[in-house]
Image 1 (cartoon, rainbow, N blue to C red):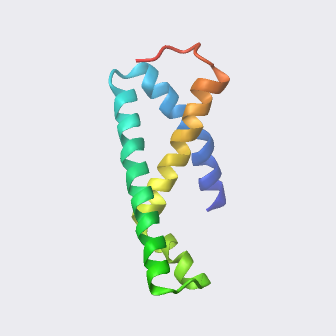
Image 2 (cartoon, rainbow, N blue to C red):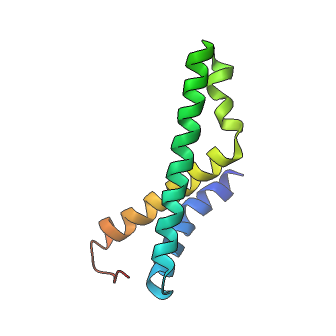
Length: 100
């Protein structure tokens, strides 16, 4: 399982960089998905924290129950891959690849 995670973390950001340079409109879709993921991730986090504080249940099990939410995990995972892709484009290539 850890090999799959490491492989995904290494390969997918480079695939996203390639896609945004080869497929018209791919950058818009990648950015829109990142925006939606950030809204979802932030919303789930906020609701969970508010629920914990209102119910006064600040225990390990109640704090970590957010990790059972597949939308939280999926949106957080996408944000991580998107951030790595941004670092490749803005950091490694620092403007040397074309932006659409």
